[in-house]
Amino acid sequence: MIDSKGYRPNVGIILCNDEGRVFWAKRMGVNAWQFPQGGINDDEDPETAMYRELWEETGLEQQHVQILGRTRYWLRYQLPERYIRKSSMPLCIGQKQIWFMLRLVTNDSNVCFNRCPKPEFDDWRWVDYWQPLKDVVYFKRKVYQKAMGELGAILTVDSVPVNATGYLTKETR
Image (tube, rainbow, N blue to C red; front, top):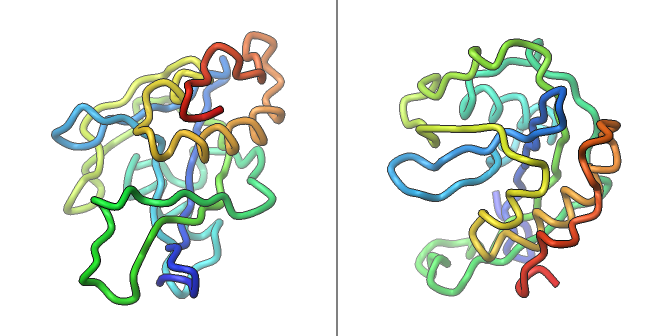
């Protein structure tokens, strides 16, 4: 499902623990880290898609998390030219995402990557809230900064600074 401007609807998931650290997942077989995310099917609203993606990518179910918030608007990023599949129609130039902030309310031993036939991730860790801005692939940094900035205000953990100063790179400014 690609919209008229070439963006694929998608959800992003920021999963935090009680210390305000976030779930950071390693893509299968490569040294690339990201938050769980995935497409919204035609018959889904963003929340339904988020729970499906959460289960497929982390093995966590609705009862394992609490929704703390979501972004108010779609956040968009464009794919670099080399990642655009020019032969597919309709042409997808990027993703538009609704981001959710979730809190884990179960033991993190419930994380399981083999819930679906083709797992997306093979490792994960808890990281400081703003660390993903340094580690995510460059073309997703601005959308991460926007999502984390908007949703970070929800967290009430004193040890989590909502200001990203020091984590911003040249690409995200």
